[in-house]
Image (cartoon, rainbow, N blue to C red; front, side, top):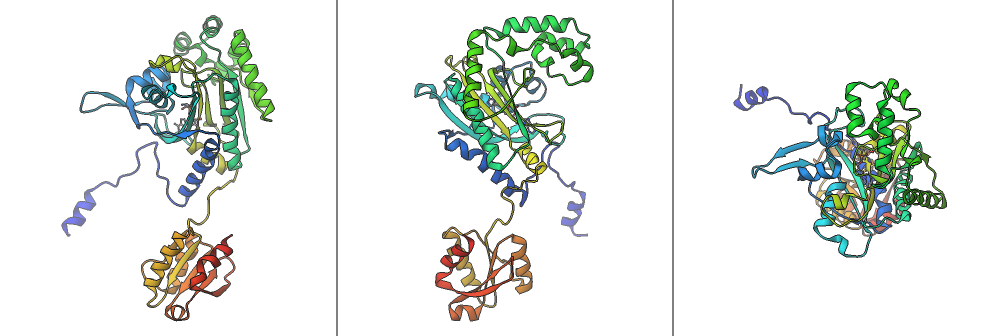
Length: 428
Ligand code: HAM
């Protein structure tokens, strides 16, 4: 047996790491269409694109997201680099964006600073449908203002993004988590309530460290005991209550609807005041397609000025599942509009024609591989293109190309020098 084959036989085939997946064509075109639809409303509202590194100082997440959260205590991909630094693959985007805001003193300009980004995140979670170890978020943050109209804008932008995709079967869950003035007294009250319940040792420990998180416990024996638990939204101080009322008034004036969710608990510790989640009805356990809220203490906590912020992240992967659940397929179809099939000695002309059509903005592909008319037409049909251009020696001599409508099968000759115009009319 030749050596190369021998070696190949001994090698294991690699697959994508557990909890990750590849996005292949044509599904990838849906993913691109989703990213585009979700980010378009941000650009029309003055949000600028930002990119930050995929890894950051581990301490940034410990301090920003919170040591007691599952994300920081159990799910981070942390490693020591060759220089001895502890680095972590980002589990979310807000902390890194806030770090950049402080590091580059973006707060020195007019506020709020409005930013958005799209990127990979990493959490060592138990993988299941909709929950991955590598996933993509679209993240938006408005930094440096606590104006409740900005809260309404942020929520409205997410709803406009979903609307762009045609998504319908989801609700906006909304509440206020108060601030450093009213939360401590509420926390004491909740802890006193939880102390009276019959809870296992783990949950009791959680009640000590982060009692709000217990409210999120879905186990029936725990949930049943939480029915009468005190909720933050009923214990807001006057300032937080006025802020929350104003947010809701702006939302009403924008014609938007939501559900009050007094027991909404987010998995990250930085939230204050307005907090929300978008929950889809067709996704089972991993139903949150996006979420966010205010984090008025985060800048100061990370060593920056005492400025507020609000934002959200939409999970691209879960949004794709939500689209599937609603039978929506944005961006599906051909990647190209036109497919060129060269015959005889027309290859050079076809190569040049492909370049000319692409330069004029018509998405075009070419039958590579000289596989004959039958094979080339098969490729044309598979490409999803609406028109095939068949071009042979006789056509070139006559100054024409055959334009075939791949849906109806109709075919007619079109002059080569007017082909761009002809195709643009047909494709319009
Ligand atoms: P989050 O709720 O942790 O918030 O994540 C936002 C969204 O990312 C979720 O609603 C979900 O769609 C998606 N997501 C989270 N974890 C996974 C996973 N393991 N697999 C697939 N999708 C996932 C944040 O990350 C905050 N930084 C949002 C924010 C921005 N708050 C203020 N500004």
